[in-house]
Length: 104
Image (cartoon, rainbow, N blue to C red; front, side, top):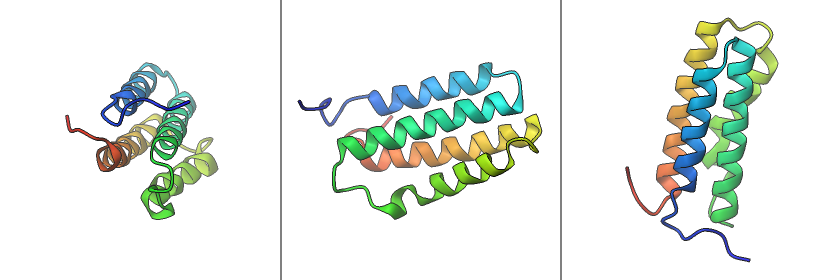
């Protein structure tokens, strides 16, 4: 079974879904959970669609930020969660742009 065509907008839809989830979350922990879900979905999608092309360095910053969020989620306030979300979405858009067949 093959995946979506290379010009699929699936990765962008994953990011949009994540942005909506983060915006709708009421607490810092909920924001972090939605953000983590989005990052996991996007990285998984990109890796599956680009088998053998995605290297550890391509996702290292995302992974590092996700580990930071995991280790500190009970200590973070809403403002810090929102700042982390802005950084994560910057990283996710960069990954999406690097491996998509089109631009937005």
